[in-house]
Length: 103
Image (cartoon, rainbow, N blue to C red; front, side, top):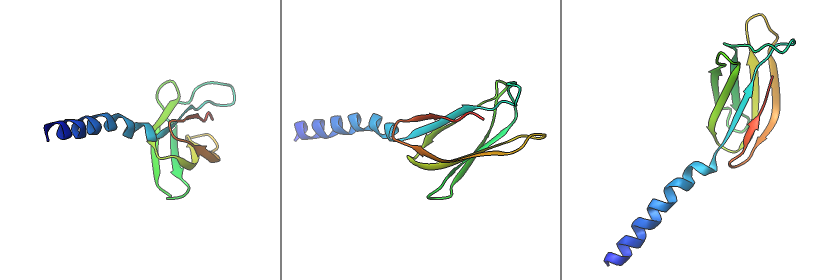
């Protein structure tokens, strides 16, 4: 009985790290036409299947990240005051993939 409990506990412990490996992420950078970074731009990611959205603001280097996304098809939109809104569609995200989408 003790051995069975040990095996069950070990299997449970080893299964925990695999949970986080079933997700992907979308990262990128937002720049203007001259190549200068745009801090404070709002970037929104939408899961096409569920219509769930998340938004972040680019940091001082113009970078953004959406970690822990469920694999699927996504649409990413970047917008900033004084600039045209840009959207990228049909971004397929796989398990453990890090998709880089620059604007």
